[in-house]
Amino acid sequence: MSIRNVISATNVVGYAASMIGLSILLVSQFLTTLLPLLFAPTVCGIFCLLVYSSRPSAADVNTGVNTFPTGLQQ
Image (cartoon, rainbow, N blue to C red; front, side, top):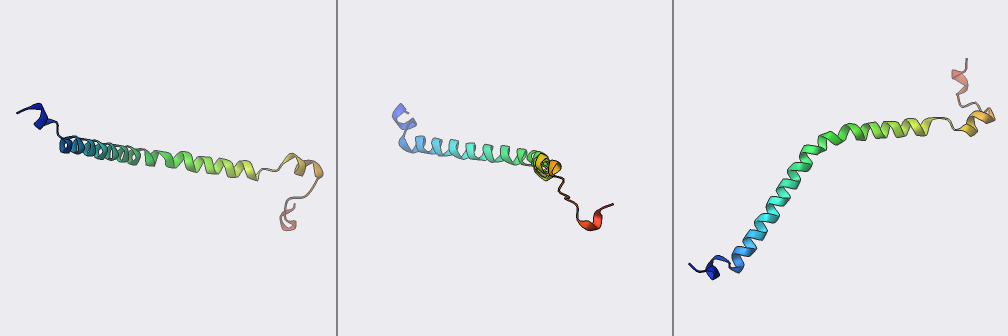
């Protein structure tokens, strides 16, 4: 068996295709493992953004504008 028979174009292409397939498999498995861990930070980030954006600004506090509906005033 000579080196020419061992290293052929079809063997190189098959080796490259199998390495690409294994890489895709490993990356997809890694992302599938990490995806549930991203849920809690996403929900927390959205909640913090909503809380931050709903707070009254300094201009609203200083102008004396009533932000409550008339039915909820005490």
